[in-house]
Amino acid sequence: MDLVGGVLELTKSQNNGSCFDHRRRHHHQCTKSQTVTVEETRQSNSPNMTLTNRNISPIIPIFVCFLFLTCSVSQVHSSQSHKYSRVNQTFQQRHELRNIKSIRAHLKKINKPFLKTIQSPDGDLIDCVVSHQQPAFDHPKLKGKKPLDPPERPKGHNPNGMISEDFQLWGLSGESCPEGTIPIRRTSEHDMLRASSIRRFGRKIRPIRRDSSSSSHEHAVGYVTGQEYYGAKASINVWAPRVANQYEFSLSQMWVISGSFADDLNTIEAGWQVSPELYGDNYPRFFTYWTSDAYQATGCYNLLCSGFVQTNNRIAIGAAISPMSSYRGGQFDISLLIWKDPKHGNWWLEFGSGVLVGYWPSFLFSHLRNHASMIQFGGEIVNTRPYNSHTTTQMGSGHFSGGGFGKASYFRNLQVVDWDNSLIPLSNFHVLADHRNCYDIRGGINRVWGNYFYYGGPGRNRRCL
Image 1 (cartoon, rainbow, N blue to C red):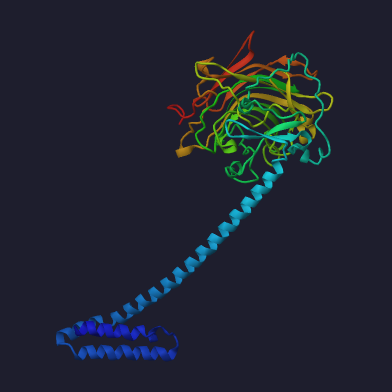
Image 2: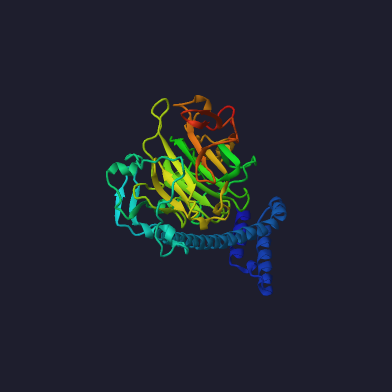
């Protein structure tokens, strides 16, 4: 009991604070207090106990002082941590507020004033915007102007101007946009929040060169190259491939290409795509794209920037396509024609049999102001390698080309536009698949379909890991 009492007395003396004051005079008082307490303990114990005190007592005051110091430092650290936490929380709130303000400012820029809004069965809002107020006319070279009149069609093309009423889901409502307006899918805050940044919203991430095994973009395509091309035409089978996660997509399209695959690549693109990040669902959607610098700073999907000029009031670019093809069931395809107007040099897009959608002004491009040097048709997916293995995102129907009609996806009636503004069959047509065990392609030719190919695949399987 005396040893315990001595320790308690020593602790009490230390807790008065004298041994933690680093001023010289208080240090002397602390030493004196410790000496007196130990001496009292020695006098009140037996010889055996005194021996024990002699061995332990020098350590005890040091240990107790250490505990007190640790406690004090811990309290200071806890206070500072709480302070830093509050500062960090305030910073995050301010950052989120700035981000929301930036998003709303961008939405105000791309969502134009409308005369009418149509609710689509899939949840989309389709705004009817006056033609000359669409995003394209924000471009300095288009301000104050209006959409151009239709150009001369390529020779050998026999349009009838018909379009299926149920080509897109929003048309099932029975409503349409008035003459002089165009239908534009309204972009929401949720759409933008899914993007990695405001700057990247509505844009493709720049793919690595196709001959690189590290590229996350994988293709199964047919192509022609080596001549001057002024357009292309194809009918594209429409499916709803499964996309594994929000950060991947699956598309089928035509590419009109000029320049190198370095920083000066020019492309004009159109087809259908499934992109959960861009649209928030897994519907196949009609889309367009363009770039003049290899997907770096220029270009965008659909009407999400100043670029493509829409002239049609019945087709909403970016809206869901209906109907779709089914495995061993009915097949549905869309016909697309892209060609260069010989008179003004703009690149026009036609859907179906003679329905003009709009055009890409020639001033958007460098190499494509003249002509294209390559035409590509086919599928593309993004593989983020979830769980360190190949993605299960499907291309086309999700089945390999060997399945044939009703099982595999196809492109048919492939043609190009030559220097004389004439549609002609392909020559020196090649097919290529980046990873044939994941997605493949096989071409053919017959009297009904002309040049065609089947393509696609399931992604990850026992031969694609």
